[in-house]
Image (cartoon, rainbow, N blue to C red; front, side):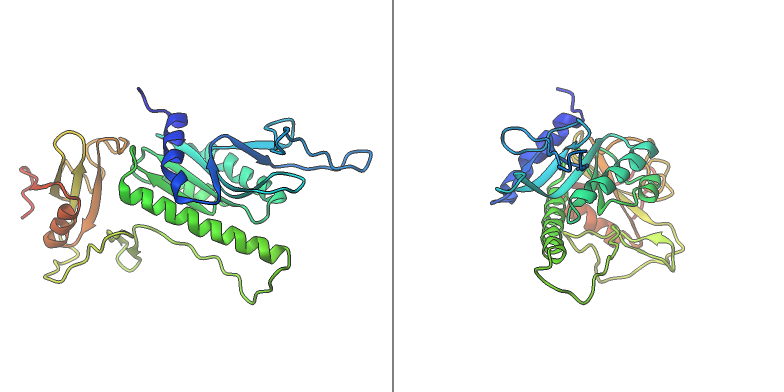
Length: 289
């Protein structure tokens, strides 16, 4: 069966559900983006018999992934975290449209956290980061998601869920605060004095003690292949097979594998390769050892 956006999203939700006891996480749930006062002075709420917002009719947007709570008020759904999912690619138009969608949704739910997730891409396009000004987080994951990527997504959703709950308490004047600060987190981290990425991960420390090579010399990369030969191959960045971590097909997906790096020493690249749990080799063409 060929994987598409809908099946990718459905499979992802199934994997996430057990991590949120006491809440619901689903795909295809609608929430309000518009409530208005009619000419009789009423606020019509277009919902189904369960008190759930209805898609369309000028009021409801369907969400790819929605983490929410069931309540017994005038509407039955309090959304906490909404995630727009794209699979295999994203356009500038997507970034602009869904950023505006996030803004509209917050008119009704000011505590809502809204994220953008791309599956089956190697990295986040710069245009998405520039144009997605109203996303609270932007994330890419492989197809299928690696265990550490799934763990990272769960951690982000839990953190954003807690933020939503805190904002709800603040906006309803249940608590008062002295400071609200928005901070940007970027992974992998990089040293702005060198303007060269430093490979880091939230789930394993790839730094080691030992000789570090001159940063002006060639860097190292590791290609982790989890389909064909299930190996981790160390390359020089200048290797034609590596192309500074872009490979021979820069626009290819992560379906077959992914690049790790750059690393400033062979030892650090070797440790990262070993941490994948796969057979470690060096490239026969560039011989980086």
